[in-house]
Amino acid sequence: MTHLNERGRPGEKAAYSKSLAGDTVDSTAVHRKSWSRALIDKATRPIQRYGSPEWCALPLDHPNRIAAVVLAAEAWAWDWENLEANLRREVESLRTAFKQEEDAEYARSVAEHRKVWSRKSNSVVLMSFEERRRHQLDEAGRPRPGDFPGRNGGGVA
Image (cartoon, rainbow, N blue to C red; front, side):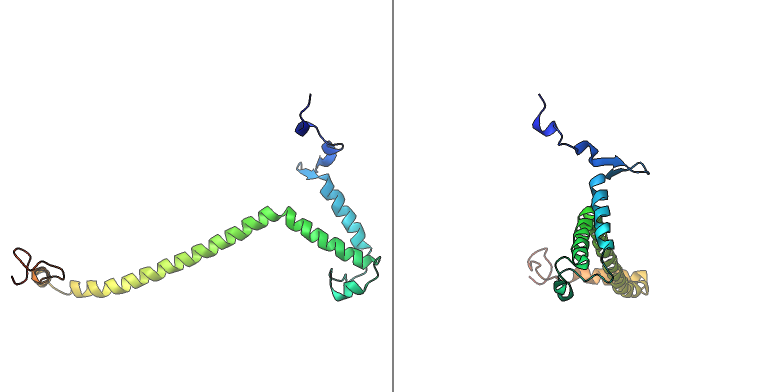
């Protein structure tokens, strides 16, 4: 006995065919597109936009009115068929923009760091070793905020 999900619907095996390039092509999409093209080709140019006041003024059976509906449906179908690729492109674009901003922020941070530390290093480099050492010892001998003023803590007891 065949499981319900394993049984095919009538005509299901014919739904896909091989294209000339060897890719699998959905024959329903090919059928839909050729049907759409035939209806669109019956319209006179320019075709009014679906839902526009000009479109609403057309008679119900006017070829331009039908073509506008078909164009809107094809646009929706194209968006659906290309949804994954469009989302990938959008995510990649956002990722690239974020990375560029992150890199620019890093470059600004590096420039600021270099500016601050180049001033400090210039003042240190201009001192001789003896002057730097004396400065270090003077700094070490001064009480710091929070030091205990008693024995071995520095400051006055």
